[in-house]
Structure formats: C-alpha cells, structure tokens
Image 1 (cartoon, rainbow, N blue to C red):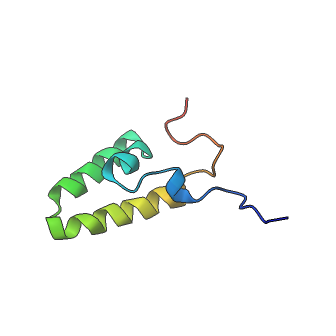
Image 2: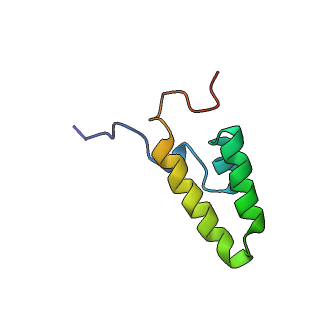
Length: 71
C-alpha cells in the first residue's frame, strides 16, 4: 500500500503564470495584480509573479472546493 497525498500538488490547480494567477483572483485583486505586473521592470516581473502565486496559494481553498470565482 502506498501513501497518497490528501490534496493534489498546488501547481496542478493553478498555473504559475499571469493567466493562472489572474484566474485565481477576485476582481479587485486581479486589477491590483495586473497593475503591479505592468508597472514592474522585466527584472522585477518574476518577483511580482512569485509574490502573487504565494498569495493565491495561501488564500485558495483545498482541491475539490470552489474558489473565489465559483458561483
């Protein structure tokens, strides 16, 4: 018998790119994310993406539960 994780790995739920991050955010958060990303220099963009990826993972529900965009 092998141990199975209770929740799938986070990267399976949310791609670590701007589209995946934006899809996991609410409207106001999405606007703030895009504002930061567009204002960032190319050198800063990776940091913005990583920061928002962590923020989404901290606030997103476990797999199988509806996220912020669920109706």
